[in-house]
Length: 382
Ligand SMILES: [Zn+2]
Image (cartoon, rainbow, N blue to C red; front, side, top):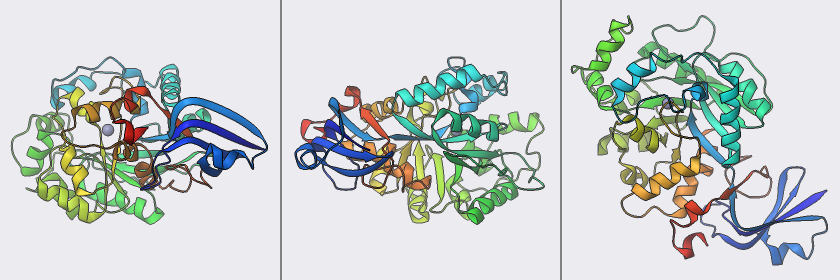
């Protein structure tokens, strides 16, 4: 049984393809069969027609960086006081008290705002989170976070079979995870052909720690008995990540705020994808990534909300609004939507299902809200 969906506009996100006016998408058993204009597709179609009305549809969104374990910290963390103060506060919070009610609220918010998939970082509850996401109907990569000095006896990634996603591994950061642990984690992801995620060059203390300069954050960590044998590589974070073999086509480098032109070129040459988290950076007060340089570099970009400990909501379109409103120069509708759809689909390994609206992919649509459409000229988005 086929169904035809009609919408005033469709941004298929197929590279170079214009927004379709008076669009139609024919779907059978949850899979897209045809995409075109209503006038081209309707005459030969016999089945149910659903008119979505005067809306612009787009592929379902992929939030490339979240920490849903922290959903219960919504509204509880300090805004704009800098990274060290934010972490000090976080360490006083009940970070491991999962709240199923708040988690459910987060899942509903994601779905309501057009998100169909998350790249989620899990510290203690990876299998539980994957199971909960599976049950919610959201697709996922849950990255088990490697942190500290110890390589696990078996593997980082636990066994688990899920309908809508997979488990992989992430390094927490260059300054909280031992270099041997980082190498082993990346090695396991590579060996299994899985995406790898890493918080990279997020804030000034990270740069200082890598350079071997004084850092309140390193003092905080070592005061808690962590990284006591840490040896500063005396390199910039991006250079250190590259030399450890952590950057390649299957790596998602998250934040990348404190970067030089040389760092950007290093990431570009590695083939890694960058996930920007603009509202999280603003919330914590670490500054802002050179978004314009990242875009101009040609590096594949994604957007992530990060956790509800450092953001007000999980609405990825709000991330897009914030980026567009604060961007200097031209950020096209196509470039922005690519960060929310086909770029994350590629790095998450799900480009066969998500990322564009074209035959053979899942019929997972989002509706582009007016708050996005009104930021662009009519010819681009209309
Ligand atoms: Zn994060």
